[in-house]
Amino acid sequence: MPFEQCWRWFGPRDPITLREVKQTGASSVVTALHDLPAGTVWTTDAITARKQMIEAEGLRWSVAESLPVHEEIKRRGPRSRELAERYAMSIRNLGTCGVRTLCYNFMPVLDWSRTDLQTEFADGSITSEFQPRVLAAFDLFLLRRPGAEASYAAEEILEAEEHFARLDQPAKEWLVRTILLGFPGSGESYTLEQLRTAIGEYHTITPATFRENLLWFLRLIVPAAEESGVLLALHPDDPPWSLLGLPRVVSTSDDVTRILGAVDSPSNGITLCTGSFGASRQNNVVAMAERFARRINFVHLRNIITAADGGFVESDHLQGDVDMYGVIRALLIEQQRREEEGRLDFRMPMRPDHGHLVEADRNGREYYPGYSLFGRMRGLAELRGLELGIQRSLGF
Image (cartoon, rainbow, N blue to C red; front, side, top):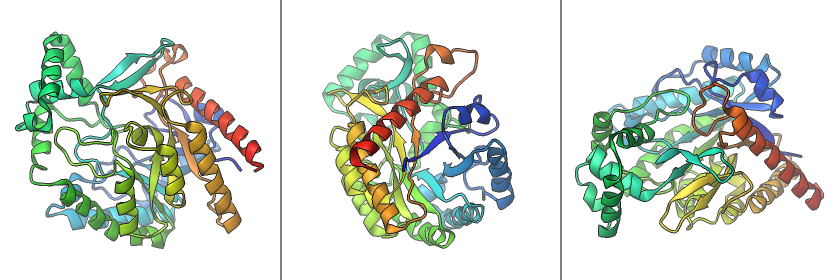
């Protein structure tokens, strides 16, 4: 049995229509109520209206991605319990409406981060990349974060200085816009001053404290997920290391082990994002797929080419440093185990994560970086073919 093949759709404002989504071969949609700010309860009426819109095109709303976690919860501020209870209510409402998987993240302040969203790949398509020296240049000389120097070695600061010296004013402004890009689907973004303020609110929060805040949150929401038949799928940090001095605690295999062990429930699972985990050479993504197979509740498949300095570029789905064959094989074996176990939800929801902007996408539509139509459709087709080949080789 194949994965449940999904497509991320940003709602009515998405330039890609649901009819086009259906014609990619996807059977399900991954979406969210992007117009609602963090901390707002997703009501059953709002969920049902979006669900009916999707089902009218013959698709299924399979995964909610993402229900944003309020920064007050991450910092465990004065309103954190109230906001966590609202979050739990949204989980219950998703379950009531039949949306059974929830992908979310616990990255402080910034979501996924890149230093260039207009990198030309070898075939001329457009992709994204991350270069540590560019991020350091932004941090040290544009953001001017207090105490930023302590986050970098002397050699890294020198490389950042050299890079910054080569930037003219338009390039500096472009870099700021890239780093401060709005969150997927919502369009929300920071100004430089707002970013400094948001980062400053974390200045006393250590990684250990931040991890405990996540576990505190899980202890509050996992019971709601269990009661509602919802599977939580925590997305890893992207990239999987600290940025701008902020703590990140969902980056490594050890991180995942601690998180899953702290609240031992099938409802407390992860999103296996091969590109996020794979950006760090310390992570063996195939081994992680095998180790955490029973607790993988959602799958993002994309590939990256890593560099010795910690940088990376997003490559085609089957071309890169992530062993996509090994990952898909491990997940299909787990899916078969679930089916033999008698689980009704044995099919894993999977989506092609990101895609290059190819010539066919240059049609006047404005796509959020990584979320083109034809680039992702190519990725889905490649992954579907690889999946079928592995299934046949395993005799499934």
